Image (cartoon, rainbow, N blue to C red; front, side, top):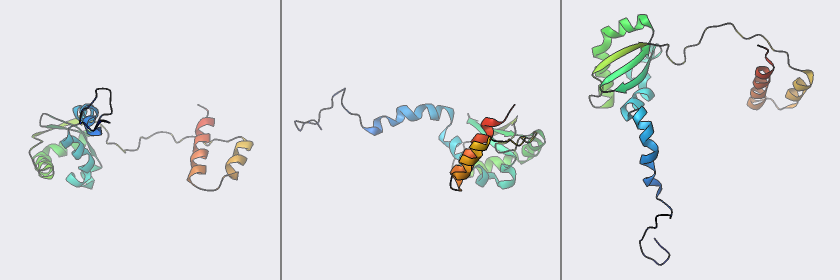
Length: 153
């Protein structure tokens, strides 16, 4: 409402927050549909913890759900495809998935193998400063940061 009591809007005046939401969310929904976002959020509930540990939804587009999994798991999932599709659609409350596509990809959260990092010796003055801090998350985080900074390649 303008100062004079009229209900005019000025082009340079403040905007309603609701008018900005479509402009902000459109890029996100282009990348991930709302159904795809719901699938990613509820994946373990939909297919169960055993399959959720070895699979990961990657993309839902045009009725095709792309799942990331390792090769041997893909063969098993091909046999379970009709059941998985019906579970997914029942969870979403509509027919959003018609086909499954499998891509070779380790699920998120899979530990990457490798050589454990070597122990790092911190300078004595830094060790003293860390020891002077009260025990807790902050001190642990700073110590971890210091070990990362002083680690030699």
